[in-house]
Structure formats: C-alpha cells, structure tokens
Length: 366
Image (tube, rainbow, N blue to C red; front, side, top):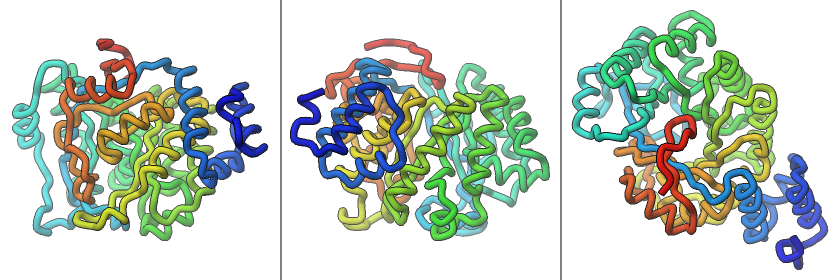
C-alpha cells in the first residue's frame, strides 16, 4: 500500500487504509474522493477492490436491445428518445413486428433480450404482458430483461394493481429480470428539477426493487450522472443502493451512465473522461456489497471502456446489436459490438474475457 499512498495527504491515506482492510466508506469519504484530483490513486484503489472480488475476469453477454414503443407520458429533461402519440417518428410495435426485427438479427448463442421503452398510456397493461408472453413463447431459451422500476410504477398506475402484482404477472408471463434504469439520481430535489415529478420517486424506485428481490428476482441498478446533481447526491444514491443490497442482496451489478447531450452538441457538453473514470472507481469503492460494476461502452466509447476495466469495472455489457436511447441523445460510440470485438476489447485491457448469461453464470472463458 505504501506505493499507492505515497505523497497523498492524510485523508487519502485514511481512505486507502479502509480499503486495505475492507472497511466501508462513508458519504464524506466518497465526496472527498470526487473532490480529489488524484485520479491514479483512486483508480488503483478501485482496481485493488475489483481484483479482490473478481480477479482479472471481465464479463459480457450476447444480448439484443429491443424497443416496443417510444411513446411516453414522461417529459424527462435529459431524454431525446421519447415521442408523443401521433408525433412523427412515434411507434408502438406488435409482437409480430418485433419478431421480424429479431429474426433478422438472431444468431446462435444469443442469451438476452434487453427491453426498455416509453411509458405509453395509450395501450393497456395487457399489451406489455402480451409482448413478454409472445417473446417467451417464440424464443423460450432467451432471458427477458425488461421494464425498469419506473416502468413498473407506471404499470401499477395504468392497471390499478400493486407493484407486487404487476411484477408477479410479468414474471408469470416470462420476465427474468429488470434493467436498472429509471433511477437517474435518487434525490427528490434532482427529480423535481429534471421534470421527473410524475416518474417513480426515490422511495418508489427503491420499494419496487425491494419487492422484486423479495419475489426472488435479481436485478440491475443504474445512476445517470453529469447534469445538475451534486457530488453528495451521487454518493447518497450509491448509499441508498448499498443499504438496500444489505437488506435483500438482489442487485447483480451497478451501471453508472453519463448523461448524453443532444445530438449534434459540441464535445464540451459531454461528461469528461476523468469524471467517467472517477465515477466508475468511486462506485466500486462505495458499493462494497455489489459484485460487479459495469463499464457501459455505449456511453464511454470503446477505448475509455478499456481504461475503466483497470479502474474497478468487471463488466463490459454486451453485444446489444442496435442501441437507440443513448444514440438518440448523441452518443458517439458504436451502436453494438460483435462477440469477437468484445473479446478483443477486454483482452486489450489486459483482462480475461468471460461470456456470461444474464445472471453471471459463465458460458465461456476466452
């Protein structure tokens, strides 16, 4: 440890000592790390924790992103994906229309459908259930990862039944897990400022995740950073997740995603590489009870993703095929990568690529 903390002030040395002994970091520790300009030390500490948890293995999944509808009642300030009903570019697909897209891109080894979309109140809850049923019937061996906690809250209002009943009906239809979106920043101040007042609140998002975990579902958690939130709110967001994980153990992975500016915006509107790497590393240090931190190449780009794999990340996401939400907002990364490209990316970072299923069961070590 002496080589890591050499030349650092006493506070950094104290944090490094905590990391060395596996002690939990506080909100004040997390904010200090964000305010520090010592990125190499923060990265080394996070890398140390990740190697302790996962060795040099970096995981990825062969998955496909699907979007049944972009019609949405919400008006989130950061979203460039949504449309109003009848607006040019708005769509609401039937299962048969989705099958046509899937069959065009389907290939052996596909493990997961990753489904997110708008909160479309022009169709009943049964529409969403039928989509899951139809996918599961046609592709029974593919895990369905669908509908964020914010969507579950919307479905509860749409259908008039409880979160638990919504989740149970979706699970009975074939839902395997939920993506982590809709969390954005778990702060009521932030959610009001970003026009999320009609979206799941902090307490609702956490309660829906808690309910899913109690039903036996393992889920994902995200954070959308880089807009108006404070550093304290970022760390508190992580602490909320850590506390729920202490209670349920239901989160498999944490995915910190930077806000993407509107398409065509200048580069100065993008979150900096330093902030991206620092957030990956600090989340690894704060979230001591979540096994994996994901470096989402869609938001990071491929080269920064390689660096992130040495800053605490142990997951490089998946093949995706064609991502739309971040790219609607101006992401500069590829819309997807092949299995071979992901293996090359991970090996290029000096790590061991591991193809996994949705639940981190290993399929192949490269």
